[in-house]
Figure 1 (tube, rainbow, N blue to C red):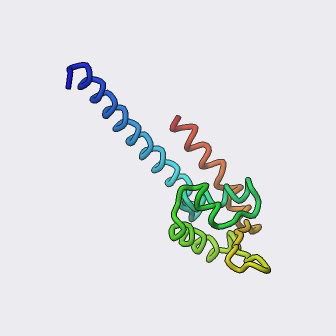
Figure 2: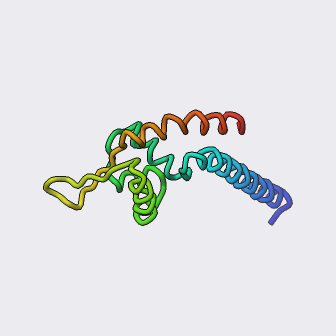
Length: 124
């Protein structure tokens, strides 16, 4: 490989490494911001997505948040155990499950959102 190609390759790898570190830092800051509310960043993402979109199919949540079906089930299980969301099966197609934000979920989201936003603004 030519010297020019090596330099381009090194710059690309260095940029990628910096992006990974920045993403990790951002993720840890957001995680720390929502942790006092008993939430993970993923759980916050579920609450926030439902608040923005309304009741959402569980599969749609998984796709929107880049999680597997199994991961999304675990996240929703945790939120449901705290009564922050509720699942509802379709009346005729029991395979179709929508996830709804509860009043408690709305309250937690309303309190956690400004703290999360401040953490992101401070980071940026």
